[in-house]
Length: 383
Ligand SMILES: Cc1ncc(COP(=O)(O)O)c(C=O)c1O
Image: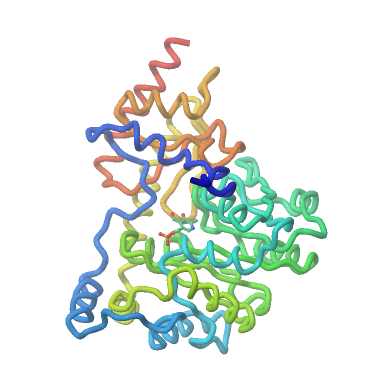
């Protein structure tokens, strides 16, 4: 047999899964980036009813017009004039990412990506022959990149920059001033601006700051219902852009990736948007209480510093553990009964950090933090 493609061989499994594979069933898990809630009942019922009503077929590639229209409407306060032609349903944010890079990146061109990062970004660019240039979002700058740093990375082969706020893994958000500076950078270098806003409904104080509505021809939004309606397993998301030429290209590509999204599920999502708009806010209130709890516990531990994030459901504390990598430390914590992700799984500047997803109950967070404290104490006593 002829063997495997260079691209398949070059791609590595993500470091996030590694810890999972080592974990037993009895650990307290801060590992999973998915809400521990059920999707709203109205969506589950609508899914069932849609299947009974015969919505079990291919849809048009871009998806159900009524759903796309409803999604577009939900953004028109920021970007007037959007309609269904600006939205393409995908089978998740993950699918949206692959599509966007397939559409925008030629071999030899490069894309600016955040670091620490959601681990799919780099491989997704590289699958299409693109090169990655990672910009750092440092703890010292509250996990937001500086424009001076971005300027050192961009060149004539840079075609796009991806921003992700609220961020996985840091939970960082941006102010409107920061948004405007990041937008101006993309404009100055005439880059596509890809904005991954899958956590847009999990923002704790004030409004989500979006790039949508900023520069209509440049901005391409990735969004997903995974986090918004706790539907990670349903695999449904969308791409949206006011740029109809870009949309036409991406809809064409989507046909070759999945043909279309899931028929019945699109009715379920439509029901969720129409009838359970408060649901994400209820989840968000619970996440905020958990965030307060986990941050106050972590910040009370010697050698641990944790920003209080304004969005998503992750904390990314800096943890002192002399002589140990973040992976060594995560393994020690696992032995002590707690699963979390080493910061290095999200890129080299994540070294010295751990990621905790607070997607478990407050009781479990408290029990988990007791264990973290006791492992860190015993490491310090042994040192
Ligand atoms: C920043 C970010 N973008 C995109 C995704 C993809 O989400 P999904 O494929 O479930 O829609 C995730 C999932 O964890 C994420 O954290």
